[in-house]
Amino acid sequence: MMGRKFVNGVEGGSVSVDDRGLQYGDGLFETMGATNGRVRRFQSHMERLTEGCHRLGMPPPPVDLIETDCLRALEGFGAAVVKLTLTRGPGPRAYPPPVEPSPTRIVVSTAQQVSESEAARPLILRVCETRLGRNPRLAGIKHLNRLEQVLAGAELREPGVDEGLMRSTDDRVVCATAANVFLVRGGQLLTPQISDCGVAGVMREVVLHLAQRLGIQVETGDYTLDDLARADECFLTNSVRGIRPVGCIVGVNDFRPGAMTARLRDAVETADE
Amino acid sequence: MMGRKFVNGVEGGSVSVDDRGLQYGDGLFETMGATNGRVRRFQSHMERLTEGCHRLGMPPPPVDLIETDCLRALEGFGAAVVKLTLTRGPGPRAYPPPVEPSPTRIVVSTAQQVSESEAARPLILRVCETRLGRNPRLAGIKHLNRLEQVLAGAELREPGVDEGLMRSTDDRVVCATAANVFLVRGGQLLTPQISDCGVAGVMREVVLHLAQRLGIQVETGDYTLDDLARADECFLTNSVRGIRPVGCIVGVNDFRPGAMTARLRDAVETADE
Image (cartoon, rainbow over all chains, first blue to last red; front, side, top):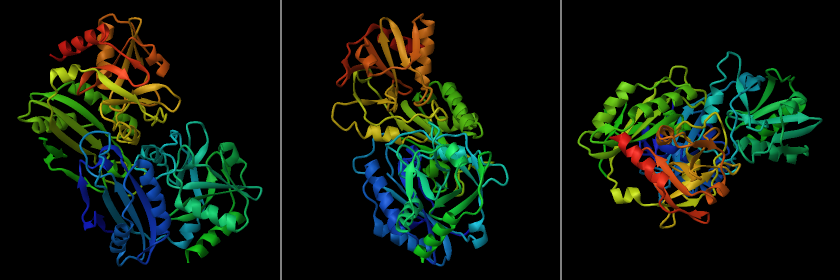
């Protein structure tokens, strides 16, 4: 696997054991798709990162430095993924954050080519037993406390399963481990609200925006497995992989390729060009 | 501040940016007090760490290697704190953990002398606004997802405030940011149950055990700020600092030095010898 790593603008792959990102998961990340050295939706990712910094009480990110790091990390790559991690930097052993932190900026690129047939293949999902705890204080932002996703991911070892659906502790369907989820029912587009758990994905925002422009009726609300069982279509969204149709949620529902999913995929691809 | 750092048994202070501890907070830690090169209650800490590994699906910790690291890190120190971090080690960008992980073992020592008068000084506590989300899957163990404690810690910047009390999202008093909490009411010892959030502290277990041996009536249950307002005594427990009396919970209650707190402090000190 080809790729490059930069820490605070310097090529290299290690951080101090005192880094608060390691000590407490005190930081944020963004996983971004890139084509021919250019990060897709860079501005949207930086906006979410800035919102995350605001919520965690960290200094806003140095967007120009991040942009330079990404350009260097992607040099010579065609299709790639670039992951940015921004932590509150090193600190002594103590939960209260330093008043004037020196954040650590980590940029890691990985070459990644997804074939068109793979991108269109309907996914097989499993409903995970691991739940998402509810805390509005941490909902929406892409912070580094991801043990719930890790434990849910550990449930996905059986062959043929592509992703896992996660529910909140109060039984609402919230997201997949690394994607947001959308349903289509009676011509309406539905997606879980991200108010007390889950990540507000950049691609989720893109899809909500495009749907509005296309005159599709959209509802964000609370949905359960029963809603998935009654849905006509289902798809996942993720910055790197875009819109991926869901073919089956094991034990819940099977879906055929749907018109709304195809229409939104086309719209995203057109918007990307 | 004097101290030494070891990563997988080698003196040094950095880890790979690919480490899952940094990427996802995928790991555990223990903060242990030490006297003259010897870790206090080492066995109890290793038992909690082992339980944490079991819960996260990680290989059990290499206790003999950890012991060797600690001995080396504490060489030449009198009173010290030694922090052990055990992560699931490096891995590619993906939530599902590697089937055969190579955990990273980090041991960091810090010289730390606490005077007897400081150890006996009643603490001033503030009730934090930041809540603890509830997820039984992660409760009790000392994992690396600690953003809630970080955000609560950021609320404690006013001078004179020693610690912060944290409540669950459903208003139960659970713990302090870095300690467990006990109340005394009508001669009975009360402490919040750790079932859906909070850490089951090693010193909390020691106190519960000693209280039982001393014939003190103990109740673990659900308590609110009202219970604190009606309590006769209050104290915090923490592996490094032992039992610390609480003198004031701002806006809730003031406490005088209490007989039960003193009795249990004596019992812990005797047990330590």
